Length: 509
Ligand code: BES
Ligand code: MN
Ligand code: ZN
Image (tube, rainbow, N blue to C red; front, side, top):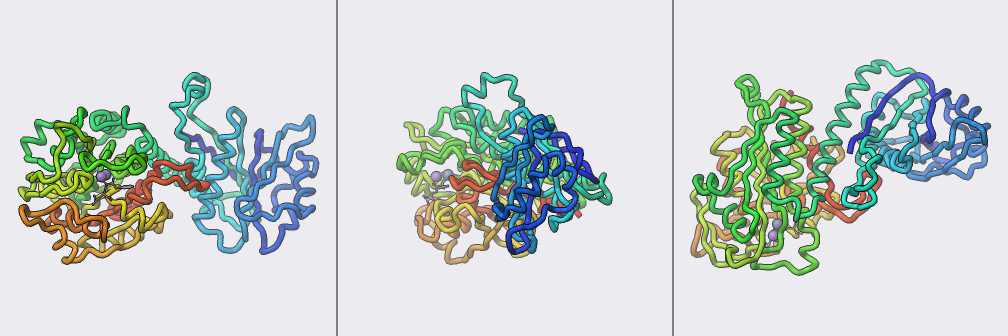
């Protein structure tokens, strides 16, 4: 999905639209006057806007919605007031969520024109508000409905939506604001790509088709892309991802995306981002329960974040060398599946005793992390994975667990998260956790059980990164959710895309 957003400044009196959306703030009490700059619109609406405000019925609480219909024979069908809450302390989150509500108005108008009018008196500077609102509009308008027959047959329904944003006052540097908004929209679109991948069912999205999508995307935006098949992974001794994939009819793939592989860019450093791409996690022979399996098409959400972030990094052409690696496999039980008690050898040469085939994510990640370190010698490396039910229990959908071997990189990621409205929360990674992952019969075992699960999983991964500054992001909670917000209808969230893009941007500076 995409949304064409057009920005005009300096007067909304003659705006042409079927739906005009106006944010209304309240000064700590019920708003008593129409914001300045709206009298032209009010006249066209037969003074109904000021009448509505004067009635005092509309309190302008966050998310309150009031539809006012225009007079018969007029050229405006409706004006929608959306409450923005108290005029003091309007932060990015509130603006983004307001944008999400605007996005839903765009959805409601399947064919008509929607304009957002930003009044000068709303306590909002357009320079700050417009990019965030635009980003929110895209996220809020997102739907995953391509498998609804009604939509598949309706060929007229275009995937391009339109929104005009009109400010009542002049904007200094309108061209710069347009450029910044365009960037925000591009990045949000990449987050929606990640949502689409995460939401795609596992009968259509499996390692090979994920690799196909990666190739297609890479070609479109100018990334390098190489895909390892089973034979190539065997050659490199990637016994861990191969073990996870061996129970499935759909063979695993290791996908490598590369941006800015030039000498000049490499001087700015190399960053590696690794994503867990389990396209379906049944648990394998350590089978999950029916309920536990339900959401497991989303078990490639880390891969989706890396995919989306790499696309954004390429579109913005950030001046730094970035490698994105996706470890894709399907975890299935079958007569060829790997077993509890198997001892496998990872690409690093370290051996792993399988004690639970449902702890598969760390296995595919072990080979991917090792490959990143050995091949690219990155200055900093992160991995994103729906790794543990423990992270979901601890954090729910509202935060991502962050742990690793480098406080600076973790702090950078937290700062990037804060800048874009995502929360990364630190978890401990102690030598004691590493001890719990040691096996009696091999170098490692693949599960320390659910107790302290976020940290023991992280400790296992740490064994495969060497001295590379590294942070592990467990998005088991934040990557998928049934929680509905103005920015999200549930399912894959695309978490990480904006944060990782922002992190790479700050590193490239
Ligand atoms: N993909 C799951 C983790 C998960 C669970 C993500 C729920 C999102 C929601 C992972 O592969 C898994 O099964 N982890 C096990 C590890 C355990 C066997 C040590 C878990 O968390 O139970
Ligand atoms: Mn699992
Ligand atoms: Zn998994």
